Image (tube, rainbow, N blue to C red; front, side):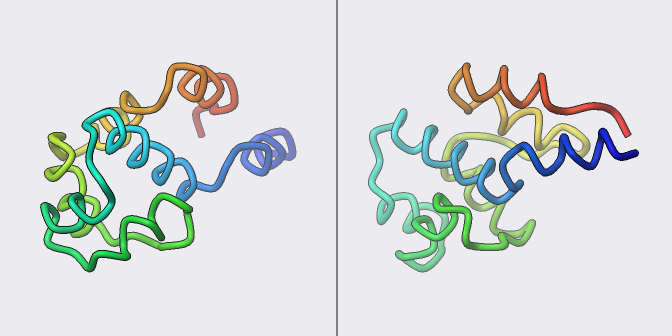
Length: 101
């Protein structure tokens, strides 16, 4: 149990991971944060908070952001789909630091 606890502390917070994925995908699409907010129907400053990992995003807003980024939310596969937007080095790091519960 101690090893898993240490692994969880060693990797970025899930909010930071999600924020990195959102920022990477947004930049890949060439969109501004304001354009993303408008497309997602959220406040214009919200994407900045998400990308910095300071916002605890609700599932409703995860779905809105995913749709605005051209992604879909599938039960049980949401994190897998979103993680495909992460830069390859980040994906490799996350795979190497995660272990099944």
